[in-house]
Length: 112
Image 1 (spheres, rainbow, N blue to C red):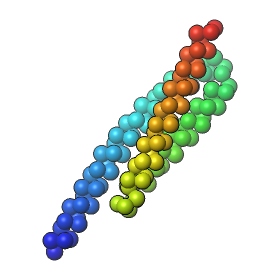
Image 2 (image 1 turned 90 degrees about the horizontal axis):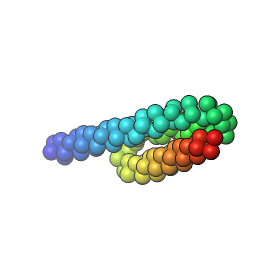
Image 3 (image 1 turned 135 degrees about the horizontal axis):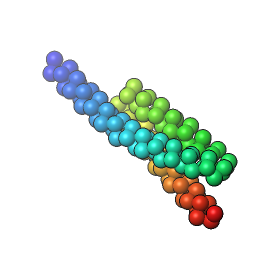
Image 4 (image 1 turned 60 degrees about the vertical axis):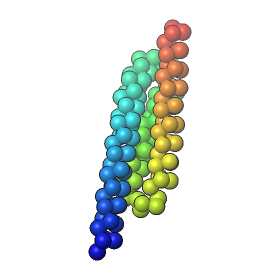
């Protein structure tokens, strides 16, 4: 009976840790979404078709990350560390691409 209670406690702790992680990643995704919307507005003003296409790709990447976070809540405990590592890598890449795109658009506006 004690084993069952400790198993439940571990599961509850794991679920709470996953929820906290999902909330953290969700905030990063929302931040990226807001930044993408700003960049998209600038790209449309500049009629920068390549950048608009890149933004569309980043929107897809954001949705893919969100799906991975949702899937994380259903993942077996043994798969959680690997899934979190993949999500962290995807978030880092997503943010880097947004920064790169922002710099590119800023340079285009500075050149005009």
